[in-house]
Every structure is written in structure tokens, then in C-alpha cells.
Image (cartoon, rainbow, N blue to C red; front, side, top):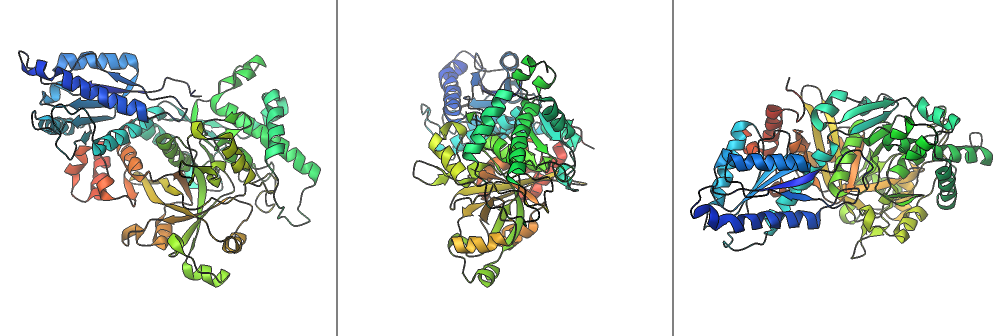
Length: 595
């Protein structure tokens, strides 16, 4: 079940119809309502929330032939908690009279491609009305003509319906939730300077701030579930094996000191969970205020440097929270950023809401050219890595799911929604992770970092949200694959940086032009030091979601045929990405005010 306060959003299906009675409306009632039922079945059979629940659709009580029917539908949707609007029709309808006019509800219209009745004509009229009213809507129209009685949903229509609904549900799930900032700015990283106005205006998310000292208070005062702590510590000792200690003999900690650090990082993990979403056990202990949490859909921990110069780092905490399992079993991953990089947390959240899977947080650290690899290793890169690789690595919050020890039906490495993960796969993820002591020169307060390699040939998408003065938010997207290097090559390259951290070798799909001319250019054009990485090629889904939020995409390698934005975007010029910028500027942030 969802750990967030508030109901889960529902999808409203609006079957609109030609309102002329005495023959016209009556002849279309069954076909129109059947379209609505087919769309609802597709959505409910296919989509689930990250917390595991199935998505629920609400269909209007009657077909909608005019403004009175539209008002009755809107009233029902309000009572039922509908936050996503999908209008369907096989025929002509009275354009603006039957449309949904709620400005905050993402909306799409599916016009049936059939020759018996002009569903496409209504679709065009409705989209023109939405554009004229300043209410962007997605238009869905199949490529192939269907017969009047055909109740199937063509593949291209199905893809667009699901892409729209996934993005719209992500918008709805974020609204009214919180970003929990534990501490504030880390080492001058701009992404950790949490912009409260951006969160509110674009995402409908409030910012909640808790000083890091609150963790020390709760540790010192025993404000955590003692039973869970004992369970968590025992599980950690059994499953989290220390790796090689890379520190010099002078800076290595004793076994007793490391034991104390393990105890503290486990307590930190429990406390960060409680800060995000509360814990009823704390109320039983007499801590009512602390038991409520912050209703956080995502969060971040400042860590460096004031905390980590004094206390164990939160690498263990971040990695475990971002994984699909812990001492309580298999469960939904949290979205929790290292260095309190709020913009990367948002990027991770986008991926999580669209795929239901755990997300990687990485430094976009190094481009390795084929020549450089050969110079330092004596070996040539081969296969999809032959033109160079990007080293994704960070001490903090990369999920243990990223070991890629889970497998799909064909035996390929993957990352799954938590309800599909087996206990055996959890154990493989743990067995393929070591926990070396933190390097003293980075983390004077100690701690432990996860250490693993991501298996190769897994499709992944890296994205990053950036804020640009004068423009606002922009989104970058790079689809590609993880690659697995020969062990001797990996060893040499990994040892040149910090080998105590988890590594993902990444090859983006290049196009020979623009930002994706080659692997080097992707690295050179990346707009920040961090990236959020999701399983699967989800660039098209991210583009649709960004359009709903009025966030332009400044860099992507998604095929033009897969780009799906509101129909009004076509009025802002022929070149897709320039039009995206102009449209987003014109409409402004979803919940805010244009300057």
C-alpha cells in the first residue's frame, strides 16, 4: 500500500457523443460506451502504481452529448477523485460543449479512425478548442481505418493512451506531496540549493526542511523503533559484507569503531524513513509529532561536508532506501538523493513513477575514449562500447537493484517492480555487493559505501533536470545500455578513481549529429555533475511527462516518431525542440504564474 497521505489518483474516461436525438445519438450509444470500456480495460489491465495497486478508471455515468452531460461527468469525477481525463469518441460531437475544461487536469482525446462517422473531425475540432482556450491536450488518432464495429484498440493507439496515462498519473501523484530536505546545500552543488518556488509552481510539491542535527537528537534520545533496529542490524550483519579497506594503515578504523559505525548508519536509515513518511510505533512510544513524518514522495540528505566530517556518511542509508528491499522484505523503493541534490531526486522520481522500478543516482564522472582505454589497459573496447564509454559512479544512493541480478523471462539482466522480484534475486543483489569502509580523505566521519558492477546489456535511460536562469527548468534525456567490461579492463579503469563505489559503464545511443554526435559529446553536453538512471528506454515517456509539466527538453536521442506532446505544440513552429521551448514558455508552469 502507498505510504503517502492522500488517495491514489484515478483516470476518468469521458465517452462523448453527437447530441442529436431521434436517431443519431441512439445509434452511437453502444459503440461510444464500448470505446470507453475498452480504454478503461486497457489501462486497468496494464498499469499499476509504484506502491503496487492497480490503476482504477472511472467512466461517466452516461455518454456526453452536451454541456449538461459534461457538468454531470465533471461532478462525478470530482467526487470519485479523478485527476486524469481521457475523452473518447467514434463520431462528431459538439466541440467545446462536451470538453473537459479543468485547467489542472492532464487531458487527452482519442478520436476513432473510422469512415462511418467523423470521429477524426471531432478530434480536430476538440483539439482546436483546447488550443484556443489555452488548455493543452494530447490528440490520439490511429494510423489505420477501423470498421464501425471493431472494438479492438490498435497498437499505435494503445501506446499513446498508455504513454499519456502514465505521465498524467505521475503529475497527479506528485501534487500535494513533499520533498524532504535533510540539511541543505552540499559542497556548493547548485542542485542541492532547493528551489521552493520551482517545486511548487511546476510540480505542486512543497519543500520540507529538517536540519541534520535531528538525526543526532533521535539517535541520542532513542526516537526510533528499537525492535526494528535489532532486526535491521542483524539483517545487515548477515547480508552486508565489508569489502577491502582502501584506507592507509594510519587512517583505518578498528573493528570496534566500525561496529559502532554500522550501528549508527542502520539507525540513520530507520530515522530517515520515519522523517519521510512517519511511523505509528513512535506514537506508541510517546512521540506523536515525530510519528507523522513529512508526507515526502522524495527526499535528500546533505551529508557532505558538515555531517560527514563528523559522522558516518549516509551511503548505506541512501543505497538501502533506494533499493526494492531491506530487512522488512521486498517493498517499493524510496526516492532519496545523495548530497541533497533535489534536481536529481526529481529526475529519479520521474523515472520511478513512470516505470515503478528503483532508480540509480550517479556522478556522470568520466568519458573514456577507445584510445584512452587502450593506452591504459592495452585492450580495445569492443561491441557497443567500441566508440567509448561513460563511467557512472557515486558513493551514495545507487540502488542495489542496479547490480542487475534480477532477470526477465528470457534470462536477461533487468530491474523489476518490487512485486515481480523474488527472494532469490534479492539475495543475488546482496551477494554481489560489498561494503568497503569509506575513504578517510572524503569522509572523515567514516561510514560504508556500496561497491558493485552493473551487469551489461541492460537498456537504461539517463535523465537530468536542470534550472537555467532566464529559461527555468530544462530536461536532458539519454537512452542507452549498460555494458560489462572484461574484468582486467574494469579493474584498471575503476582503480584510477574511487574503487569503493558502485560502477555502471554506460553507452548512450548516438545519432551522428547534435548532442548525440558521439559518446564524448553526450558527456560534454550533460548539464550537471549528476544523472538519474532508470531501467528501460523511457525517453518518450519522459518527453510526454515534461510537456505536461511545461518543462522543455533540451537534449534527447528519442526517435522523432515516438515524440508525443499536446497537439498545441504543433502551432509553435516546425522544429520539434524549438517548438517545445516556445510552447512551455507560452503556457508557463502548471501550478504557478508566468513572469
